[in-house]
Amino acid sequence: MMSRWIRAAALLFPGLLAGAFGYGAVNVLYAFREVPLEVRFTFHTALMRVNGPVMQSLMGLTVLSTVLLATRSKSTTRWLSAGAAALAVASFLITRLGNVPINQHIKVWAVGGPPADYAEILRRWELFHFSRTGCAVAAFVLVVAAVTGVVGAHHPVVEQPDPA
Image: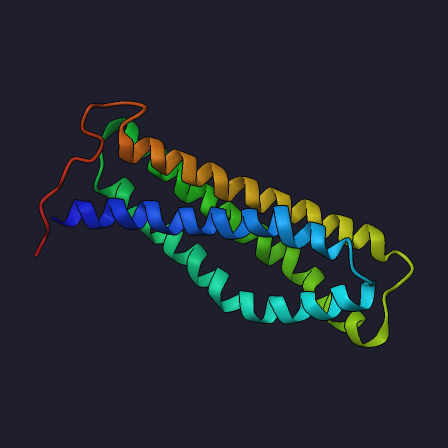
């Protein structure tokens, strides 16, 4: 049944996204603060190079799966799923417009050293990271509520016939 796959994907991808960002916020970020700046900048640059394609794909799959769930649902579940999709888009935009430009600066700092105001710039990166993490966690919570029926109707997902 298609709705089971959609529900599974809508739980899996937002859960992975929230978990990945959450791990970064709780573990990686605090570890960054404990090591010398050169180590932080070098590791940050390497991590972002690996994370870029993975996290962008995960954000895209989160948006896709939550939009599919919204289109295949009715009532409260539709609104919860649409809200989750909007939060996933917000997480993507925060990343692209906030974190990624700072990542480009950090890449330069790893080679040539940081500017005098590096601490303020790193603080902004962290604020962007906490913001995108909050969006991802909130999206996951909305999907859990939508799929489990915690909020709204007894049967959260109403199967609509496939057009094929």
